[in-house]
Image 1 (tube, helix red, strand yellow):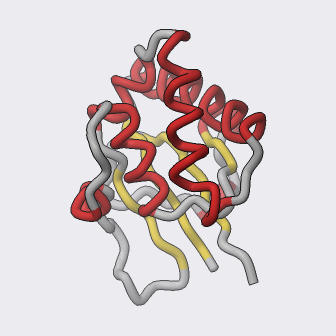
Image 2: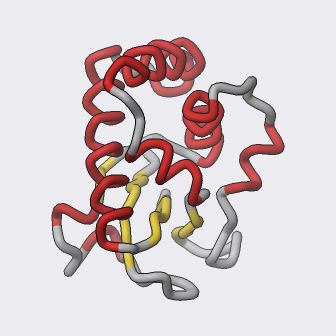
Length: 140
């Protein structure tokens, strides 16, 4: 059994209804299977250019009950704006850092990580431009 996870943007509702992307504009989500709040927090640390701390996981606040079949978490606003405005030169450093920190958990190639970060950056730009909020959705 694998983990499904997607980043998506939506109007700032209390708990946006995602349902795996059904009915959502394709441009409003990034499929990111295997990304948990742990890896999202590691990415956040890289974006902030600070050491990762496990307490950063709590910044991805659960909007759904933890005993639900799938979970929606908020993505910190500064992660979205910083990612949207990340200079091209910093993208490479972020990809290298994220690759080394998640090598065991994700097993993604550097090319996969670069593609993911660039897609997420595009989503963040769309999020900022449309004044929406970003969320992380996970399901087993």
